[in-house]
Length: 318
Image (cartoon, rainbow, N blue to C red; front, top):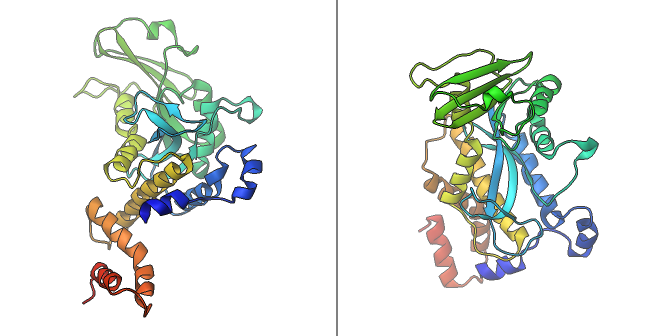
């Protein structure tokens, strides 16, 4: 029965899908996705530290925007770019990758993602931590000046703004700093012949941690960079996903995993709720979702005796 329902499950009007898909490859599940994201944004206020990164929903079926990501556990799948709370891992906002596109006004693609995903926190003086695919000097300055958001992120060595001295060999555990009116650049050498480049509009001093000999900006980056990766790990640890060949169904499984994590974050933030292990929480959540329908079905007088016994056992009724 479960497999049959999965085969039949659809998320839009098939008669209008072809017309909508001409301008939106994500059309088969776009409406459901947008409603889910609106709920996620409206129910939670993030902490002062957020993370923007990518999640990969493992998928081997056919899709024009399936990607390969060597660094991810599943390697092949559907990419979701998202903003998470760096402290609770709550998914605040997200957008699916549906193939190559050109952002308006000749904006760079990484800049477009950062700007649109962070719209709910514009003007709040929060910080966003990103990896080197998103990081650039123009983006960091624009986010600070136009949207009052600081950013911290590693930089690729190919960026034109990096002085040659920041790429030269240095002693292990040594740091080199540079400043302008809005940002700080640091080059840190963690081991021989390796430099870590980090850009920050949040930090403005050459502060070094005496215990690790690392710049404080590097330590801050390490403590806040994992918001999205930790969220992805939680999705993998308890997932409802099943092997499927249709990408909209895989997105639906992803939505259920993502919403379950968000629900637990909201539950734990409410002080009067007793602390609960995630496995127990998911079982309680599933029961709470199906309970009204089970109770309604139990009222059917012609219901088979075996089904009636099963429902009463699930509901804990004598």
